[in-house]
Image 1 (cartoon, helix red, strand yellow):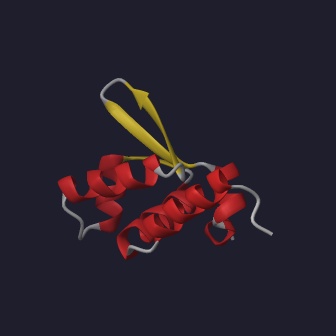
Image 2 (cartoon, helix red, strand yellow):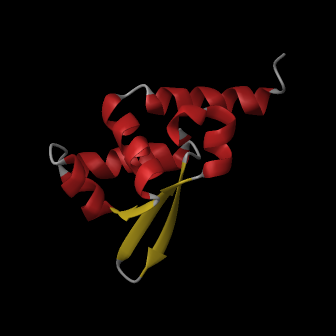
Length: 93
């Protein structure tokens, strides 16, 4: 049933990241909106400080759930759909 150790490790990282309510909200927001920059994510969440938001985005990016794209001084985040389909299909409903 368990595919391989790397898959298990990645799944654990993703589930740990999504176990924090703010990170789950961020992932759900990005699944709906497709692509947003950090300031847009912060304004939609309203209750998250900028430094805390950066920490959450870093956690979600490091586990592979989010992808980022730089345009000038802006960083745009989006859900990595392939990873979400495999480990967190609930986000894509």
